[in-house]
Image (cartoon, rainbow, N blue to C red; front, side, top):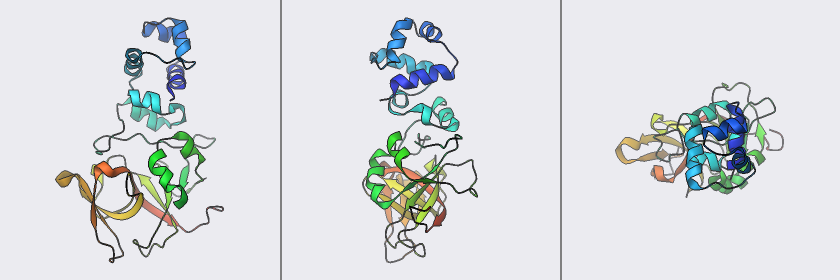
Length: 238
């Protein structure tokens, strides 16, 4: 839980003293100082903090806001939150370099089982290998996944597919190659056909025709990344 460091970060982001914020929330400065030192507030006070800073309780508690980019913070402050239906923008955990620029995290096959459950954990994401691709536009968030199997030939098994993060799944155009992070089926790379309006599913198609197409419910989807490029580099020498 990141509540204590988040309220301190948000207070400083608004350039408020402890006394200023305490007055606004009808608290004593001593009480606020305690919350910033990990004293747990009652639920009604937690709601008051969330409403004041215009963030969800989930974001206020679960995510280390200081580690997010300015764009992501603006998303949160704009009312967007995690939503598996794809109707809202999801909060994405990323890491940044010393200049504040987003890294491209690499998710090797051996880490993919952990990724499907810890994708929102800042420590897990920060521990992943990282690299950069200077030719990619800087206005998107990217992640690279090592591909398993031969379902997407001519892209071979073991290469790294780099995708850009899709915030709103309803915008996916039919025939778009994507990496899909699922809750139950691991991480898959497929050509996607959008059936969200019709059946709240995506139709996933392999380029290798020995694999049959199948539908995937949005309830089983965690993240979707649009294919941008792929590389065959060694993870130790990206």
